[in-house]
Image 1 (cartoon, rainbow, N blue to C red):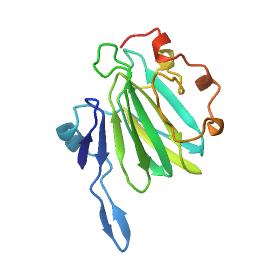
Image 2: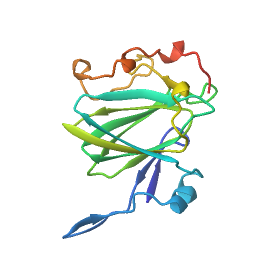
Image 3: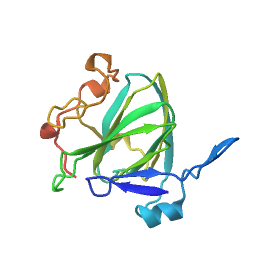
Image 4: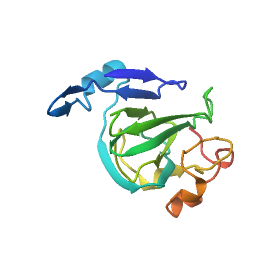
Length: 182
């Protein structure tokens, strides 16, 4: 696997080594040993999957300490714009984000460490999205930011009038109004 560093320390894009022939392709989607050698030491404890249609925007979500989570995300059908926002108050990149297109064709994965809000927008008719977490989900620890916070300046690559949100995701605070600390 190739690890591509981003402008935010710890946030990386992972490209697997693909083996293709006339039958199709094969790749190793995860190796604990190689992940620890090339990215960081972590143990994933939960795998999740979601299915969404065009315009769905999920995020920007995070888990507050002590239930914070790192995530390793990928798309197995369709395409998304995946976004990680640095919410570590004392970080030199606080409030900055990394956005990457993940598709079933490019097989890229995106690693989001603890201390980041995460979200994605669906760019194709249908998406199947998978992610690994290094801590269990704890509903009492949920946190989120407004997807359309102008201070974040995220271009979700879908028109605002086409965005489909859950009721909960319609009412999150802007980063400057958030009342939590990482």
